[in-house]
Length: 284
Image (cartoon, rainbow, N blue to C red; front, top):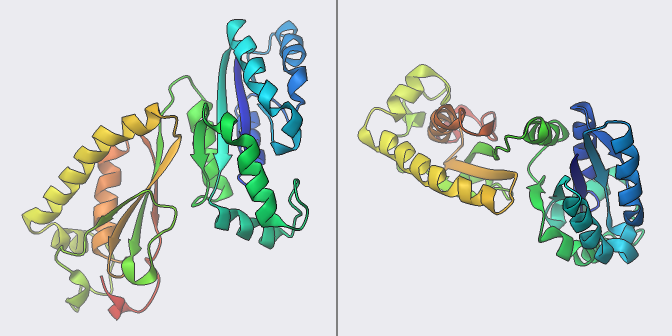
C-alpha cells in the first residue's frame, strides 16, 4: 500500500493537502491516533485499498515520539510510506489565524505560543519528511502541487517562478532571487512602456542584446544543477524570484522564458506579482 502521513504546523495547509489527496483517489483519515495506524492499514488492505493518507498534528503530542516506530513498522511490512510536512513562516501563520479568527489548537488565543509549541513538538518528525512550504501559495496552488506530486509514482519538484519589482519589496517566500535590473529597460520607450514583458515587442527589446539570453542560460544552468539536489533533500516546492525595478517588463520577460525552458521537466507555477501595480511610468 502507498501511505502518505500528512503532518505539519497548524495553519500550514494540512487539510488542503489531505483534500487534494482525496480528490486523486486516496482513502483519507484526518488526525487518526498514531497507535491505531497498524489496525487502520490492515482494515484497508482487506478492502483492497492501495492508496491511503493519514493526517497527524501537534494535538497528538504524547504519541509523536511513537510515530517514528509506527512508520518504520509499516515500511517493514512492505508498505511505501512517505511523510509530508506542511509548514509556513511564523508571520504567515499569525496572519492566517488572524484572518480566520480561529484559536490555535495548542494554546488558544496565544497564537505565537501555539506556533512555538507546534514547531517544537513536530521538529523530529519534520527531519524525515518531504517539506512543502505554503507561505507564498493559495489554496488552489497547494492542491495542484500535492495532486501532481502524488498522482503517480513520478515525484517531480514543483517550482514557483515569480516576477516582481524591487520597489515593492522582496517576496518573502522566495528562496532564490535573481536581480535582472542590469538588462535594457523598455520602461523609457514611449511605445513599449505601457506594455509588459509578456508582449512580443517588449520581450524582443529585452532580449535584443546578448545579456538577457546569457542571463537565462546561467539561471537555467544553476537550477538544473540545484533543483534535483533540493528534491533529494525532500522538498516538494521551491520559490524563485526574478526581480527588476517595477516588475512589469524585464523580470516578466525573463520569467516567461525561464518557465518555457523548465516547464517540461518540472511542475512550474508562474506568477507576475507586480504586473498591475503603479502607473505606466513606475519603472520596468
